[in-house]
Length: 498
Image (cartoon, rainbow, N blue to C red; front, side, top):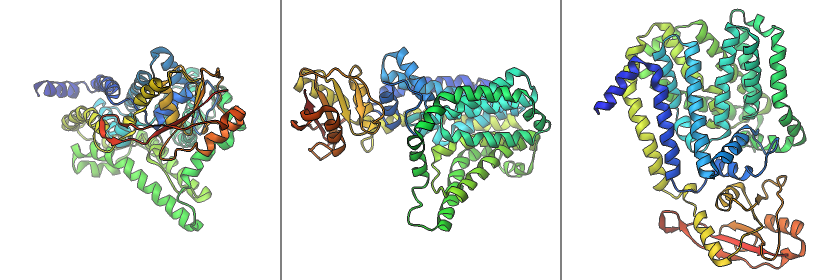
């Protein structure tokens, strides 16, 4: 307890040292992931599966995070360590760049620290991003970096800053496609700043655009050839509640969902930052400054674009993880309002720090508990136990393992790192394999059905010919990892030899 008080006093005197706290926090989270059962969640499984290919594009997400993950795997040589290492490093980079952006816009270090804590304590940030999100974390980083580059360019229109601006724009477009919404909103915010039109019309902006274009070009060419794959999933999700409703009802659903998700994302940060100031925080809403107008215009531009998408394309579903990068600067907007009102920033930070430090201590513990208790999770799927049984029963190394979906494929690849693994969800991604009588192709699936699923059967007939017809299903029944009394969905497989 005494050491906690000393830490709080030190942070209150030197707010920038909060970054050391976050560095320690994400080191702890790295080890938490290694301590959890080794089953992979959906996004983790996709990263492991796609690491078998280096491509300009894969599916409905741009490839930057995939490329980074492959580089980390090459260094660590271990999938789980690589997943945990990149996630912790990426989130630390997100938080550090967020603080850097706040310091550019906010004069008082205490308020910049409060903005960063408000951002970190958004549930989609401290929980979802830690457990699930991959491409979204890269988008959050690039939103911070492009806003930093924009502020620097507004203040000092050097060639270096324009190149940084173009680089951030290009890399951002390789994280998630919704990053494109950031660009017109940021452009509007810059134009409305004093001297902003002059910066936008500066000939050096052409260099920035060229840098962005060169970075995006390989993926853009892939996108043009694979537009259906790249856009269908997102479009389907965003219109998933629109079936069997008229257009007016679709628009109503979309606007209601947008408002709900915006409040859901904004409320935690507003509460975390506003509570230490009490009623003063409410009166601060009327205050204004050039910096608050810059960030406010950016956020308003994002919301207007989303509303137009609802009106024109009738998108009806906005997931919180999709909106998080677009609205993540809202905590900075709140502290800019407080600063313009003239609050006692140091006193507010002192009130916030005790609860914040306790929360940062409890969150990793909660993740450990959640990973082991309650209903069985993805972490507890017994893929490791299945490999042990398979190896003992068959005493062979598969030439290739084919599964129906990427969740199973990533988990299987985790257990067989030296064996090619494919899924029929990605028919465009194929890998060579050495097929022989001693190294059969394995078709694997899970569930109650013991006959080969139609998708796997069709793949086998198309790729393995007559050999695919002489198969016998084998079944392995196992409990969830750490839950001996709870049966997991059965593993089924067939061996196909030439």
